[in-house]
Structure formats: structure tokens, C-alpha cells
Length: 630
Ligand SMILES: NC(=O)c1ccc[n+]([C@@H]2O[C@H](COP(=O)([O-])OP(=O)(O)OC[C@H]3O[C@@H](n4cnc5c(N)ncnc54)[C@H](O)[C@@H]3O)[C@@H](O)[C@H]2O)c1
Ligand SMILES: O=c1ccn([C@@H]2O[C@H](COP(=O)(O)OP(=O)(O)O[C@H]3O[C@H](CO)[C@@H](O)[C@H](O)[C@H]3O)[C@@H](O)[C@H]2O)c(=O)[nH]1
Image (tube, rainbow, N blue to C red; front, top):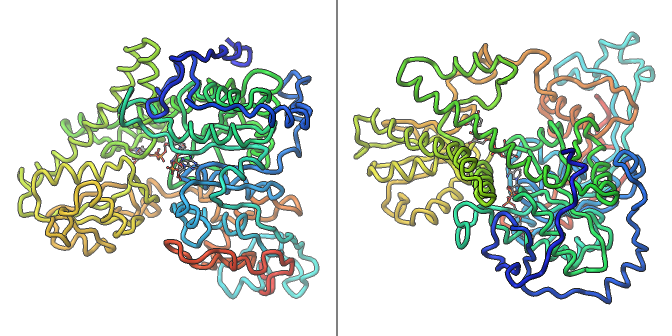
């Protein structure tokens, strides 16, 4: 059936059975779900708001295309609830690309908000800082020449690209100059959750949806506690007509639960709930957001649903080509996120299962991945065999999918996807067994260096890290020392986490076997084995860029390493300016090559100082002091 022709969700009935305790809410809303035990409709206020708004949502436009073209400038204020790995970078990208929209990211955790407002961001993502320096701090006006630089020496910068100009650098007036205006800050981080929600035209919900650890569905269903709590806040505070967006990964039909909550609190108002799952991967969040393979927006198949989808589309359309923005039915969109993760994880378990055959036969898993990946029907990505996948998403989303299948009476489907997790667990334990076997069957009295503690490279996120699993298993065999090193993780944070998870006594300072190092050589000193747990470049024998097989071709080089000029427009987009910044920064090793940055927030690690004073000159429109050389 055409998704857009699907009937709207069945209406819900408020029976006693449907009032579910929030802490045990199942993954899949079962027909009807009204989550909140205490529901107080704000009828008088709603009636007044309703009248004031004149039910402003356009209901007379019947096609998505028509609404898409009529929704250009309506979004002025976006609120993102949840300042985590998804909320922070996604909101930052939206703000960067839409200087006319005020984007506020709110979180209930004041420490996290303080970090976002400081120099020391709560998450490590390559390129994220640059975006915050623009959207959060505002920028000065600046200018540059619209032609590529040929000379790559620093001296050459000031007479930049003179070799391309027929009349040489003395004749500056014949070189096309691009002038970019100053930007005011339009990205804010705050703990004022209800206030920000009440001001927003679009509310993004990007809170955590981990696996439930107690009650019905424990260990498999999705824990909806945070999402349910935010839905209630939104239902109480959202302004009439605001569009509510699920950014979190959620079970299929969660939009119905949010809609129920909205209807219960504000029965006289209409809100639209969209599904807009996020597909970014940690460590590449900025690139993924800048050049998404697709943006999926699910809406109800009604004029109001299409209109809401068109509003969100207009925000993304500032930088994402329209052809990559896919609009679907709400439930297809919700489910497509779980399916995408299940399919990706399945590829990893498939190749890992074959790695065991390779080890037994002498075939090479890397050669097999290379050879099968050349078939475009298979493709080369996500075929890297390893120690099993980790991270906060794959396992919990597959568990959620299998729980959904079982709830729908489809145990065979559940079992099929469950095998992806079974192979993953098996691969992890197989790896530890292999380490012990290589060490003559015993690690007693030996030192083992663990290189890589986060779940993968370029992130400090340790959720579901294979490394932690390996450390736990190795501890059972009583090694003399386990020395841990990760280039992205702060040793004191790792120590705190290990003490919390495994007990203080396991740390060396307390007489235990585990020590965490800030230096890889010290970690490996006199070790009997060095165990590489993540694909960090510094652990490679041959750096990725020097390996002939992996060397980037000219056309496949990082965008930051090619001068993107000349720009076709004299008003380059933020993406274009960012690519120029990256190129100049990488080429000349200068932090702020365009002279664009305002002062950074005052140092505020672990929250001593606020950023107020840091915005010195944020409103200034004078050009950067350094004379333009680029
Ligand atoms: N991490 C990823 O790479 C990734 C990628 C795509 C999708 N997702 C999905 O996005 C969602 C968020 O994931 P994440 O990794 O960003 O989580 P996270 O734990 O990093 O961040 C969630 C934030 O929500 C805040 N929060 C929770 N309840 C709140 C409330 N009631 N009010 C205000 N703030 C509240 C938390 O304090 C936390 O800062 C999840 O559903 C996840 O599955 C994650
Ligand atoms: O060929 C591969 C690729 C990845 N991995 C491992 O798989 C895990 C997940 O890696 P990756 O997918 O790169 O990171 P995530 O941040 O977990 O991103 C996944 O999960 C996110 C959360 O839902 C989705 O948004 C992303 O699209 C999806 O890639 C890591 O342990 C990797 O080491 C492999 O073992 N082999």
C-alpha cells in the first residue's frame, strides 16, 4: 500500500488497562496507550489559545508538494530537548545553516549544558567546535578572494594566488573579493526546558531511549521514561500549532503515544507529530550531518501532516538537496530507523562469522571483504571484521526490533534478528579466548595492554564498548596488570567508570590490576600482549593515508583539503565557507584563517565560569583585524 494512502492511526480509548506505569511502559504501544497516570487538561487556557491562533494550521492544501512550496519562512524558533550526541550536533548544524532561526538546545542536566556553553564540549566530534564557534558565538564580518590558492607556503598566503592572476598581486582590484557579513549568535544551550518549548515553532525530542532494565520487557524493550517525560512537558508547554518531532530512535507507533499525550493535556488543540530519525554515526557526526545520505521525515497523511513535514523540510532544505529529503508515513519512518541499524549490524555479524572460517582455513577475511565488496549489490562499506560491534545503538535497536516482532506474534522474525546479536556476543568472547590461547592458555602474572577503550575511534563514548567486555573477561583469568590507553578518553574518566562498574578495588591505586595511561608507550611498556580494540589510526602499523590500497584518489580526498574556490555565487553558503575554512586550516595550520571568530567562551571545565563575558564583540560588524590574504 502507498504509505501516504495509509489510514490514520486507530483512535485511542482511555480504559483502566491503558494507563500504564511509565517505568514499565512496553516498547510497542499495544493498540492504545495513554501513558500519564495524572492527566489534567488545561481546557480554559487551550480554548483561549485556540481562538487566538485561529487554528492557524493550513488544512485546505491537499498535496505535500503544494505545502512544501508554501512554507518558506515560517520557522523562526526551534527547540531541541536533549543535549547529547544527537541533540547537540544536530541542533548546531541546523543553527549554522539557518542563521535566521533561533535554535535552543535544552537539557535537564545543568553540567552538560555548562559544558556546551564552554570551550570544553561534552562530546568529541571532529569539526563540531568550528560550527559552535560560528553559530553559538557569532562571527565577525570577513572577506576573501574568490580564487584558489596555488602557493602552499605561509609566505604565499599574504600574496595569495598571485600566480593565477594575470596582472599579479600588485593589481588587487582585478581579483574578485567576497565579503561575508557578521553573524549574531543563533544557537543557545539552556536548562530552561519548559520556557524554550513554549517559544518554539518546532520542538525536536532527542532524549535517550535505552533498553529497559526492569519490569515488563526488561533487557529488550525500549525504556520510554525520558521520552514520555518530555512528551508531557511538550504537551503542557508547546505553543498552539507547534510541530513536535521525534529525533530519538523509538519503537514503531510512538508518535501515537505522543499524540495521545498532547490530546489529553490540550484536548482542544491540534498538534502534528513528525518522525525524523537521525542516522549520524559517532566520530563522523559533523560530516554525516553536513552530507546526509538521506533525511527521513514521517508525517501523518493529512494536509496538516504534510504542512508540518514541509516546515521541517524547509529547515533541512537550507543545506540538504531536496532529492535527499524523503517524506514517508510516520510509522514507516519510525520503523526504518530500527531496520537501518539492524541491516548494518547484520553485515558486521555476517562478516565476523566468516572471519572464524578464515581463521580455521587460512583464507584472509580482508581479501574476502575486498573481493565481495566490489560487487555493487553488496558494496564495500561495513564489511570490516573485528571484535564485534559496540555503541549505544545497534544492540538496543535490534533488541527493540525483536521485541516488536515478538509483540506482533512473529517469533521467527525475532529469532532471525536475534542471531545478529548472538554472533556478536560470540565474536567478542571468541576474541578473548584467542588472546588467552596465544598466551599459552594463561595470563596469570602477565601484563596486557588494551589499546582503545571507547566503542570505536574518534569518540570518547564507551557505551556497549567491546573493550569493557574484554577487560571483564580477562580479569576472570587473573592477569598481573591490565594497562588501558585510548587517545580519545580522559584517563581519570575511564578510572571513575571502571571503579563504578567493577568496584574501586580493581584499580592499581587500590592494589588492583587495572591502570589507565595517557601515553600509549607507557601502557605498552613490558606488556606480554598489546590488544588492539579500536581502529584508531595511531594503532595502525601502516597509517591509513600511506597504505597504497587505502590512499585517497584525487577525487576522493577530504573536502577540506581541496580549495573549493572559485565559488559560483558571491554569497557562499555556510557549507561552502566551512569547506574553505577547513581547506585553509589544514593547508596552513592556522586556527582561524578567515579571521572570522569572535572570542571563545571563558574556560569553564567542570563548570566554574559562565560564558556571559565570552561574547565580547559578538555584535560587532567590523572586519577582522588581520588584513585579508586569502
Ligand atoms: N548516539 C548516536 O550516535 C545516535 C545516532 C542516531 C540516533 N540516536 C538516538 O538518539 C537518541 C539520543 O541519543 P544520544 O546518544 O544523543 O543520547 P544521550 O544520552 O547522549 O543524550 C540524551 C540527553 O537527553 C537528556 N534528557 C533525558 N531526559 C530529559 C528530560 N526529561 N528533559 C531534558 N533532557 C533530558 C539527557 O540528560 C541527555 O543529555 C536516542 O534515541 C538514540 O537511540 C543516537
Ligand atoms: O565495518 C564495520 C563497521 C563498524 N563496525 C563496528 O560497529 C560499531 C558501530 O559503528 P558505527 O556504525 O560506525 O557507529 P555508531 O555511532 O554506533 O552508528 C550507528 O548507530 C547510529 C545510532 O543509531 C546510527 O545513527 C548510525 O547510522 C549507525 O552507523 C562499532 O563498534 C564499529 O567498530 C565494525 O565492526 N565493522
